[in-house]
Image 1: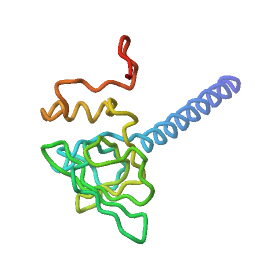
Image 2: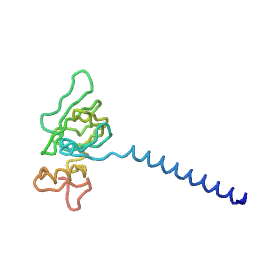
Image 3: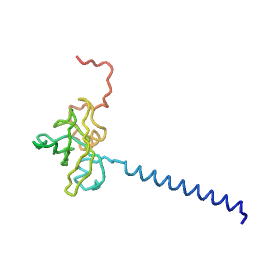
Image 4: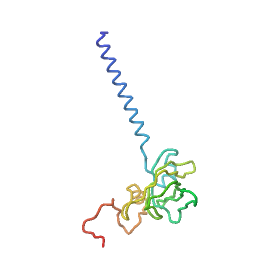
Length: 162
């Protein structure tokens, strides 16, 4: 083989190996950052992976909030009105967090089926609900309210706040 061709072949192979390594690293980083959404029904049915960071959401069940007096530990139940899942969180809950409201929690599911959350997100006004929670509640036929569709927080023309 001609030395010039051999040199070109080695350069092309080195470039291809570099591209393959870069693609593998990018896919690995993306896979670690994906947080799939699961409803309480899916979690209760065992569809959610354990020890993998997931998002879980639904409505905070009435009278389920339990706080410890001497720490920031909180435990509450989230429901899609078909099944329930217990969520444990250590930290300060969002100001808009309350029972009967929609939330999304990010964390890992333990072996007991309890979500150990490291972040809790609450809805930001009286009309907004996370799209995943809205879809899960629609699918279960338990969307709260009198037939109104929750919107994405956008103002509606022609309505005033008086």
